[in-house]
Length: 151
Image (cartoon, rainbow, N blue to C red; front, top):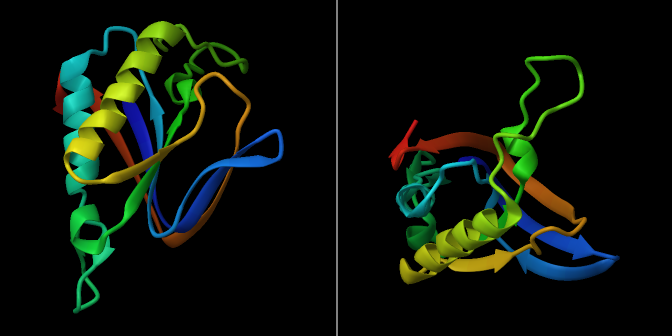
């Protein structure tokens, strides 16, 4: 499981020119599920996202997490994060989980975040989405969860 996380002032997902999900301040999480990922990776990823201390405290240091700031998550499935470009110029996506498995695990990450008190808005799996965001910082973090551990 791989995530690209951006701290944002606001973000939204549009499908066919209609806004289907939006947040104010918080995190946009582009999440790719790999072949072999399971509940352990989903739990590790949700825990890391919820606890990620990338918001400024009173001293201006990145020291606060989503719960401490009241921030939300915009969770967007992104199988292309598993692209393999070692051969040629056309990406291979054989490392990405099949859509059924990926959908279940992305839904599980969303559920686990909500159980931690995080408001979660979501894109729609398997559809063409336009994601618009105002990156705050900019702050961008990449997280890999392999065998339930965060790399």
